[in-house]
Length: 397
Ligand code: LMR
Image (tube, rainbow, N blue to C red; front, side, top):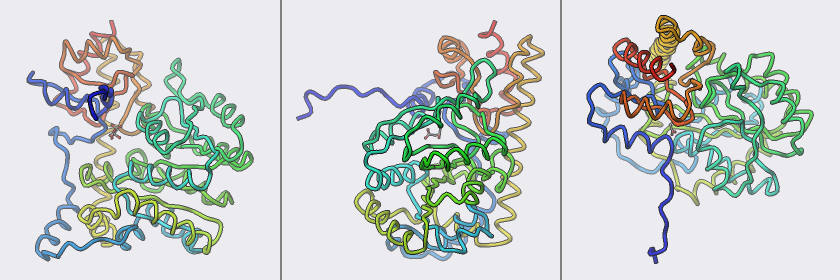
């Protein structure tokens, strides 16, 4: 049966990690996958998470199944974080949130849901977008098109092009928007630009699908959710939000995410949620307990939530400092053209490095980056910064 199966190309991001792990050179640096490492080069176990985890271990609770759509305490806390505690949508009962297997699980459940509700629609993603977006929406049966986003000449946003392309989409097209810390470019919209996009989405009757995987990684919990808050206030009746705690709670392998569906009325959202539950049940049945319990434990305790937000603030400030340090040091190495890195936001920078330059970084310097030139600035620290800067400057000459 399998004799004719051909080799499928490896994942451009996770496949690179496999190569990195197999590399035996000392001092290797992985700027490929989007993971936040601390100053010591370790994935942090956040202080508030550790507190909850220790309390849970002492409780030694049995592991029954969660409901299909997850832990209620997790879903309620997630809604407040995503939409804001005082959100009129929440007060009106127009949001249903389901705990999912990571942000990717939320994307896939959201995609499967929309395929049932909008079977003829296309999905529009930014050019470029996270490598897996196209794959997930294709797998759900959608044709995926692109809208202009990144401008390689400025290393910033091609806002005119974006508006023009969104304006040309057929009504009912699902538009995937990155709430903040755009992956892979690090190029975000200003609040004013979001206002324009939301107005256009409303006017053209597009269906917004927000992917928010980095809330709190650029400006803060509320500021990074500007896109969601503006959509919520726009009068647009329905949209969906996929969010992830992989990065903001440093819980990558626990696979903690959520899908929130906004509908026109309380009754409508109940019906849509019944379809979400059917979709989850037919896919992975119900989510996993541990990660959800950790996030809910932190978010539902005032003290631990403050502790978490403090640490998250330290993390984003460290990223900002690494961006600044990289730009400053590259200028010293005669490469001042990388100043845009400081204007980009979140974990990633589209560095402008070519595939050939990325190959040289890996082969000659044991520094791993994505072939598109995406680098994870959250993997930099004061110990590896000089090495990385010297190598980037060398391949840029
Ligand atoms: C990334 O883009 O590196 C992360 O979102 C991890 C992943 O699953 O690709």
